[in-house]
Length: 282
Ligand code: ATP
Ligand code: MG
Ligand code: MG
Image (cartoon, rainbow, N blue to C red; front, top):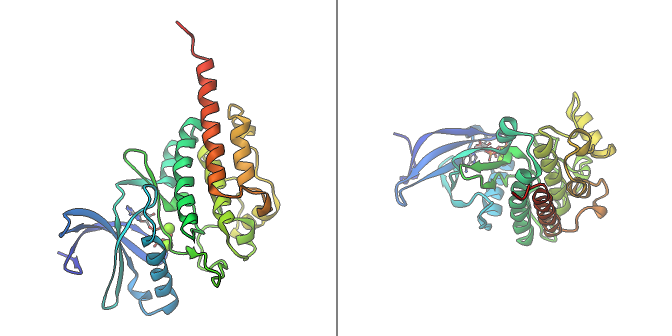
C-alpha cells in the first residue's frame, strides 16, 4: 500500500482543503490512527504556500489542549510536506449544525465553552487563529469539539504583522478589521467565536448576500441581528454574549477569551436555574 515516511500507512482520504489533502493513516510505531495533512504536490514548489504550511506546523505544535487538534509530527520527504495530527473521528461542526441546528442554549453553550477555552489557550501562548469557523472545528463521537487548521495562524511577536491573507476562504466569520484588510488581533478570534455562537443558536449565518464583498460589507456596517427575533426563548443574557463578541469596534468587544468564557458559564448556570423553576415538584 501507500506509505509515508516508512511509518504511516495511508488508509484513505478524509478531507480536502484549499491547498492540501487530509488522509486517514495508521501510525505503525505507536499503533494508532492519525490524520495526515499533505501539501498538494503542485504547491510544493511555491515558497509562500510552503511557508504557510510550515507556519501551521509551528503554530499548532506548540499547543496542547483537549479542544485543539494535537499535532504529533511534521515531516518532509522529498517534495512531500506533511503534518501528522490527532485523528478526530466524527464530523465538522459545520455539518453538525446542518444536521442538528438550531441548538438550544443548553446544547450550544457547552460547545462554545470548549471553543473559547481552546482559543484562550492559543492566545495565552501568543497565537491568534485568524480563521475560526465551523469548517475548521471537528466534533468527535462524545461531543468534544476540537479546533484545527492553524494554517493562517500568527504568532503574536512584536515584529509580526497579521495582515489578512488574500488566500482566505469564506468571509462569513471575518471580523470588521479583517474584512477591511487590517490587522487581526485576539479580538478578531473573539468576533469569529461570536458568529459561530450565532450560527449554533439559529442554524444560519447572521450576514448573507450574493457576493463575498457584499457579506464583508455587512460585517463592517450592519449590527449583528438579534437571535431573539427568531427564537424568543433564548435568554437576553445569551444574546448579550453574541452582541459583545461581535461589536464592530474591537475596543468594545470582550477584552479576552477568558472574559467571554465567564459570561458563557454564568449564562449556562442561569439557564439551568430557569429550567429548575419549571420542574413540577411531584
Ligand atoms: P483550508 O482550505 O480550510 O485551509 P486545509 O487544507 O488547511 O483547508 P483543513 O481545513 O485543516 O484543511 O482540513 C480539511 C478537512 O479535512 C476538514 O474539514 C475535515 O473534514 C478533515 N480533517 C482535517 N483534520 C482532521 C483530523 N485531525 N481528523 C479528522 N478529519 C480531519
Ligand atoms: Mg480549513
Ligand atoms: Mg488551512
